[in-house]
Length: 157
Image (tube, rainbow, N blue to C red; front, side, top):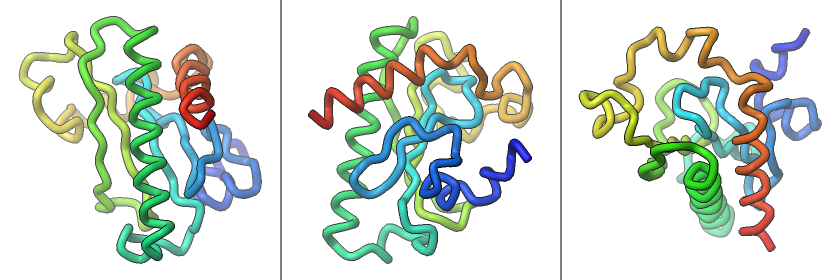
């Protein structure tokens, strides 16, 4: 089934079956987000499906994960500044409220966002934005996905 990877995002990434993976990084996987109402939204997944919290990683792996998060953030910033209109900044978040595995959100923010939301956490966007088909990841997001991947390659050297 096409969406089975969603039930095991990390395992499917490790097996090479997660279609959202953009690049393998030192301590995880850079993936494009399932929703794209803010074009370029990405997530860093840990590469250990048993790790739920940053504090569970040994110090060296914790540092590697945080460095990967910074690298993904910079790649999203560079890519979105280059190809998306009205780019402002990137927000980085490790929340851990819904999914039981370590991951970090990388949210590009834009000048064209609604005035009442542009300075607020992304999580305050209306629920319908998260489930609307028009915001679902699709082929139309390939340019931003490819641009982020290229920037990750440049940053990795």
